[in-house]
Image 1 (cartoon, rainbow, N blue to C red):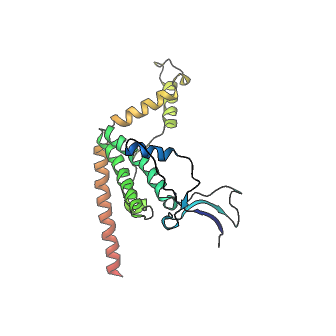
Image 2 (image 1 turned 90 degrees about the vertical axis):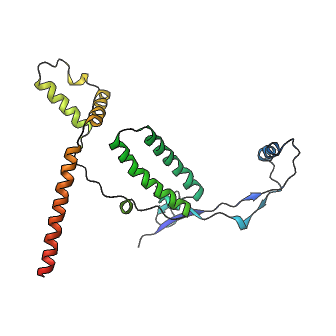
Image 3 (image 1 turned 30 degrees about the horizontal axis):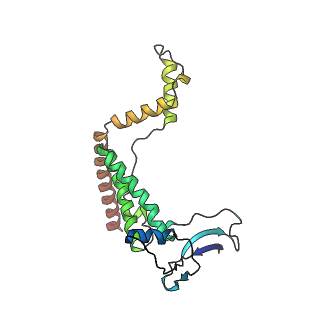
Length: 217
């Protein structure tokens, strides 16, 4: 059975009670926060934070002696876990707010739903949700990358005498901009609907054949 070295940590609050003279409560709070003298600080053991994982390594007694392992995020410090996920949620909100394309909104909407499920798990002190269990499995009908687009550019230039540019004249930025423009402008709704209809028919036939075999058995 594998052996791991796990480093765990918990936060222990240290507090002090000191008098400050100030015109307002806000000014008094500022004086207290800026006060660096903690000689009379007391440890509050009853308010110690939850234990969380701060490092993991393969093998016994290997802490900081080799590459650290990636620890699942639900073992992070709860407060840090909230802060890290806040950035994800903020990014998704910005993307959704600035996206008008229906397909793009659907794409980011699915990810926003998963992020919301993780946020609920964090607030409940639970482990991260299983992405496969909370999201339907996607099936990509068409994709291409910019390297393929580059190869197509070279083929077009080689076979079209009207094009006077060399393949090297077409920069990576040109390829990227063109791919983005084509992806945004392309309407594959009919192909998508047709594929979904064929998938539905195939699923029905598969179920009929499966149930028929069960009855025969």
